[in-house]
Each structure stands twice: as structure tokens, then as C-alpha cells.
Image (tube, rainbow over all chains, first blue to last red; front, side, top):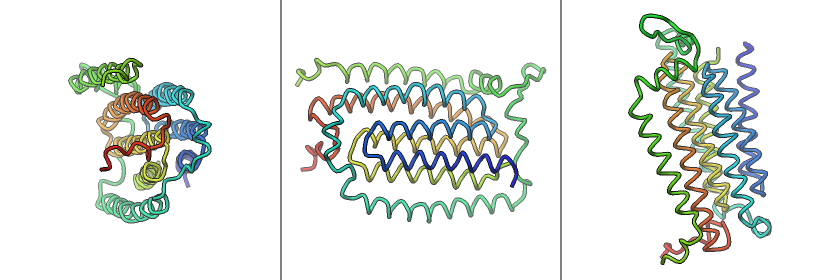
Amino acid sequence: MTPALIFFWILGAVVVIGAVGVIVMRQPVHSALFLLLSFVAVAGLFVLAHAEFLAAVQILVYAGGIMVLFLFTIMLVNIRRQAREPFLHRQAAVAILFGLAFYAVVGGLLVGEAKKLAALGAAGAADPGKLATVSIAGATVAGNSQAVGWALYRDYFLPFEVASVFLLVAMIGAVVLGKRTMEKVD
Amino acid sequence: MVPLTHYLALSFLLFVLGVVGVLARRNLLTVLMSIELMLNAVNLNLVAFSRQLGDLGGQIFTVFVIAVAAGEAAIGLAILISLYRLKGSVNLDEASEMKG
């Protein structure tokens, strides 16, 4: 057991506890807080996988932006009424059975294939240092953020612009859907 | 150094928990949260493969997945607010007009 592996499984346990909490908590506020726990632990896993920039983005966008959005929405809907109704669907037992079968079959396949791939050669992973260094015009600069930024603005510039248009469309759509006067349209 | 199989097992477990959440809960809010869990599982997978292959592409894709997740949360919650205004509840079983 290397220290990285120990940290990985500690963080993995936190991720799974958070995910289970999202599913089993009756109150949406509790679900949201467990979701926050899961997001923060995933950010820790990103750090372990040499994706430091993404860990920061995960905290800022998920734990900051999306969680605030969820909590504000929970404040807008009437939870008191929800609390009296059954919170699990009729098909919950079937869903859990399906989940177990899905995990066993597809998870077994995935892990088997990955093991085969690892045994086939290539002697394990590539050098993780490659994720943090990039050579710009001959000179090599270090740092995961810089490497990601360089790849994003040079090799993936068009998808980046499309993503910004997408976010604009999503913002306008959310404003239109949320407008109170839309009730009178039909 | 964490082997790729551990990342795969963990991220797929997270994905399955998201699927179970979508199928088992009646509250639209928790269903949306479960979808976020599934997107997180995908991100974990992409980052693990990026580390394994020493290729930054996986991390770039994760940036885009996070952008899509933000848009999806905004639109989903706006739809939830409209549903709540229409029905007075965010229970998915009450939105059954198209059931026939």
C-alpha cells in the first residue's frame, strides 16, 4: 500500500458516502450537503491524479456555483409538503437490484479489460510529469494550469468558443423559463 | 501511484449510485443531484485515463463536461421552478400529463 493508494481509498470512501447520502436522505437540503461532500472529495481525487487545475475548477464551479444554485432552488420550493410524502419511488427496490446487477456486469467487464490492458505491456502508466509541462516555442514551462490553458486555447479553441455560446444559451434559457409572466402565455 | 483499475471501479460505483438515485427518488431535486453525481463519475474516469496515458486531452474534456454540467443544472432547476409553479410540487409522479 503506497500512501497515494491509501489517500485514494480514503477519498473514495468519502465520495461513496456522499453519493449514498444523496440517495437516502429524505430532505433535499441534506442531500445537497452530502452532494457537496462528494464534490469536495472528487476534487481531492483530481489532485491525486495530477489534475490540480481541474481540482480548483471542481471546487469553484461545483461546490461554489452549482451547490448555491441547488440551495437557492430548495429555498424556493415548499419542502414541508414534501416531508410528508414517501420519498422513494415504487420502483426503488427494482432500481437497487438493477444497480447491483449493472455494477457487477459492466464493472467486472471494465476492470477485466483494464487488467488485460495493463498486462499487455506498456509497463503501467505514462509519466505524469507530462501533464504539467508543455513546451511553448521551444521553451518548456511547468505547471498543470499553464499546460491546460495552453492546450485549451491552442488545440481546443473552437470547442472552447462553442462552450461559451452554450453557456450563453443556457443562461438565456434559464432566465426565460424562470420568468413569472410565462404562465400567461398559453 | 494508483492503478487505473481502482479509478475505474470507484468511478463506475459512483455512476451506478447516480443511476440508482435517478431511478429510485421521486423528488426532481434529488434526481438532478444524482445526474450531477453521474457527470462527476465521468469526469473521474476522464481524469484517470488522462493520467494513465499522459495526455492532457482528458483534462480538457473534463473542463467541457463541467461547463455542460453547469448549463444542465441551470436549465434543470429553471424547469423545476416552472413545474413547481404549475403543480405546487416537485414530485415527478405528478407530472404525468403525457402518460396517456
